[in-house]
Image (tube, rainbow, N blue to C red; front, side, top):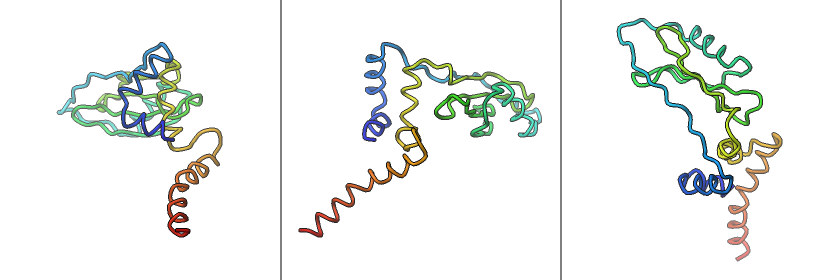
Length: 152
């Protein structure tokens, strides 16, 4: 657990260490160029989502990020073989056109290892019972503190 916290707080050194150890680079999510079309009418979100989900057909919709002046509508999609929803689809909100998509399942091993830190941190790996074990590990220092004060 401590390693995942270190990876969240000191990302640059941990990324460098991981890339050096695995002799490959961590891939970043693509950046999509987008300029909002202020005069055009936006399509219904349900139509946009249907267009986006079809771009990564075997995936399941995980989260919707509504469009802003700087960003198009973004969908996070979970591909069945991913540990978490790391695949993305970007959709133009006025035409419904899929601007770009990113299949996180196809990422290299070092990128998948880097992304696993979140699932490891929250204890959602191996089995559903792991979260309860993680909670117990988190509470051990508190129990030791109170029992130490009680015995003293």
